[in-house]
Amino acid sequence: MTTEAQVATLIRSDIAGGIMQIINGEVIYSPSDITSWVKCQWGYVRKLDSKLGKGNIVPPETDAMMRYSARQGTRHERYFLKTLQDHYGAENVFIISDEDLPKDLPRSEKLTILDARTADALKDQWPVVFQASFFDGKYTGFADFLELVEIDGVLAYQVLDTKLALSDKLHVYDLQLASYARHLKRLGIPVHETAKLVHGNLEETEYFLPDIYSRLDLNLERLNKVEAERRADLLPIAWLSDSYKVCGGCASCTEQKDLDPGDLLHVAGLGPAKRNVMVAAGINRMPELAQLGPAAILDITPRTLQKLTTQAQRQWRAIETNDPQISVENPTAISALPPENEGDLYFDFETDPIFYVEGSDRLGIAYLYGLYSKIPLDFKAFRKSEDGLFQYLWADSRDDEENMLFLFMMNLMDHLRDYPNAHIYHYSPFEITTLKQLVFQEHKFTMELQDIIGLGKFVDLKSTVTSAISHGLAGYSIKQLEPLYMGKELRTGTKNATASITRYDDYHRTLNGDVLELGETADEIREDVLQYNRYDCYSMLRLRNWLDSLKKEYGDSR
Image 1 (cartoon, rainbow, N blue to C red):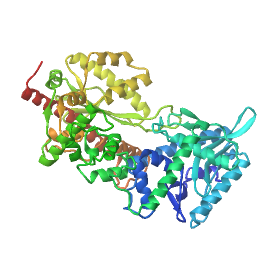
Image 2: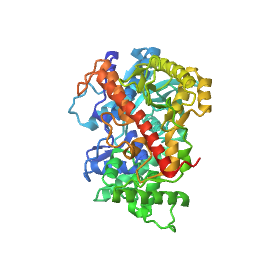
Image 3: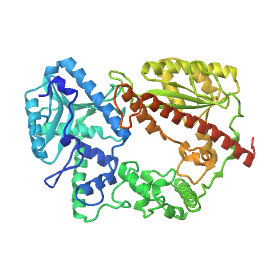
Image 4: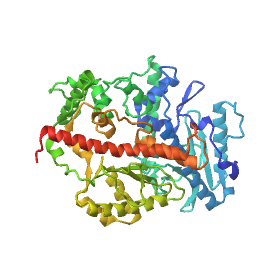
């Protein structure tokens, strides 16, 4: 048993961390393999082929955001462990560990030993078993927590798992919990019929296991069938195979998509589900979709198919001619923009959706409010750039976040009294949705914000762009549009929202004494994030100007 002092540094060895292990030529399945399969069938098969010695090495599924998410997930797991230790006493929580085993011990022997240790701890009815490890020769698993509970006078172990995620959109976490319960049944251990998932906001989702076992069996049967198929096929899986669905976003899919500018997944509005339908129908690339005739019949509504065909035509022409193929389809949408006012603001949030505070009933933080204007404006308590055109609020903590909301709303209301014809421009509904969430959770400014929204003071430029303009670009994010109007003023440093989040984590790690690989200071990292936010705000002003130029070109239809 690992002591409480060792818990803080306890890290499972490679036997727990690896997905799709092969031991003595046998594929060993874990709950993570089921998750991988459900998320992306093609990506899973490519990993399997690589393990079987076919195809190129699979790109790693670990980037800065995933590493940050893993650290936050570990913090959540450790916090929940501490709550159980506080409740039962640390001496009543058994921690399964392989720290005492020889490092060169064969993996199968390690798994077998840990399975036996888990079985002994459960038969001894420890109140809580942490990091229970299972192995039956073909299937393995590593459960976060098993808690001994009494229901109607009967003692049974309830499976508990911790996940930062606030929902299970893909319905995979319940399969993981059911797989751990199946191992308990194999060992002859009484299993509670429900299992629980403890989310990052400490809310719990309860699953009724008898409803899940059949779906678990179907997925395991499918994995075994896929293994047989891949062993029988001498060639690695092809990207344009119609046998397995792609997700479009994993490292394997992204690598393949980026190899071909004519890949279907580059077509704006064409997601992986529609791509899978098209590949199954023999439509493999953008130029083939662009040439699709009106009589084509696919399992896609005719209206949607026509829209995607037209978009593919635009994008393929853009690639061939190196021209973005801009077309104003609805000048009225541009004309509907309010007249410019010297008090107009260009507003952008930076938020971290997985900012974690132990014991908190919420996840995430809004850590940066950025505002850009054409003239210097003086919002009280805001920090300002040298030219006074960009001003911002920055939060190091939840207390800072609460104070920022107060400062933002008070300044905004004062500003709109001073500039009654001014508007606040943003890109996408995210800013308004986030503000609504903040005022709701703080129980402040609810009516004031609703009044400002009701007066039409917030203007979503993305809504204008998508309503008015067609183009040959790959999408409608502001970063995809910037080549149209930003000229040579290109982004440097942090370049997207995900990078901003991980940089904010770097900032906190540096404050806590960590030394980063590049040796940056907290101030340097914060400045990098601020420049990213400033560019986003300034980009909206330039976008607004570009739309005005289109209004003049096509005429004001008001």
